[in-house]
Each structure stands twice: as structure tokens, then as C-alpha cells.
Image (cartoon, rainbow, N blue to C red):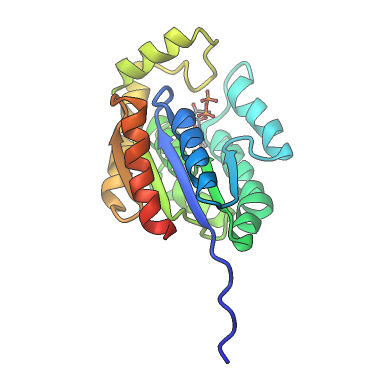
Length: 212
Ligand code: TYD
């Protein structure tokens, strides 16, 4: 007799620049996946765990500089704890994990943004998570000027990364697009200037195909 197949969860991450609408799309996807009768774990990086919340406060709200390598290590530490204690157990239970940001954010922000070596930044996260990669990564692509206008309209104070200059955000955008080109099977790239319901339908279509 063959052993019963282990339950298989599904892991979806949302990536993109600040202001691209990841949180809205993650919430819409959560609603739809729950309606399909699946258990959803909705989470984010940095800050998906209690330890992560402390790290998030340092990386986003510390006043003054943090050395680029220290910043990369802080995000990687958050990620290591998050995957070990929350994401992996959820996937092993067969849940659907819907997550705002993962290691592609480190490659884009700490690699291209802070100008660290992209391959090293990626390897650091792969070491931290014992090689965990999502099943689907939705990249919400938006030009930094439109993203900035959305953030301005939000009227929330900017965090350390959001406060970076336009060229930083342009490099981040290009890095995300390059990551998507390098892994076309994992990534779906969507034009984040489209209306939210159109984007949600495109995300659902892709997720439905792998959920079946
Ligand atoms: P996010 O939670 O998307 O911000 P908000 O709550 O304002 O929507 O992300 C926080 C910031 O952290 C964002 O500017 C991107 C940055 N970041 C990195 O620089 N590297 C990383 O590895 C991650 C996960 C995020």
C-alpha cells in the first residue's frame, strides 16, 4: 500500500514597490481562497511573528543609518524565524499561505537599492530559510512616480525605505522585473496601475490553476 500523500499547502507571495497595492490584493485573494474552503494564513515580512515585529521596528523606524549589510541580515533574521515557525508549519498542515513580501524584496531593496551583491543577498535568505521558495509570486509592477503619488495621498509618515530617493525606487523596480524574467514559472507580473478588481481576477486565475 502506498503511504497517504502528505497534505500539500500552497504559498503565494506578493512583491512590488511601496504603494503598488500588495496589501489590497493579498486581502482580496485571502477572501477568495477562504471561499474555496481552504484555510488561509495571511502574513507578511518583515513582522510576521513576535520576533519579527521587533525586527520590523528596527529596520523601518530606527532613526539614523543602519549599515547595508546589517540591514540585509536583519531582514534575513526576520525571514529565518518566520519561515521556521509560521510558514513551513502552515504549508505542512496543507494551508494556503498568502504573504506580503519575501526574499525577492531583499534582492531588490538590499541588492539593487543598497547596492549589495544580489546573488549574495539571495543566498543569505536561502541559507536562512533552508531554501524555501514560494509556489507563486505576484509582482505588482508600478512606475515609482505613480507609486509615490499613492503614498502621498495616504498621508502616512514615510518609513526608512519609503523615504529613499526616486533613483533608489527605480533600481528596486528594475531589479524586481529582472527577477521575474529569471524565474518566469514562479512569477506573474501584473500592471499595478490597472483597477483593483481586474488585478484580483488575474491573481485568482493564476492561483486557481495551481490550487486545483
Ligand atoms: P511593507 O510592509 O510592504 O511596508 P508598508 O507596511 O508600508 O506597506 O514593507 C516594509 C519595507 O521594507 C518596504 O519599504 C520594503 C522593505 N523591505 C526590504 O527592504 N527588504 C526586505 O527583505 C523586505 C521584506 C522589505
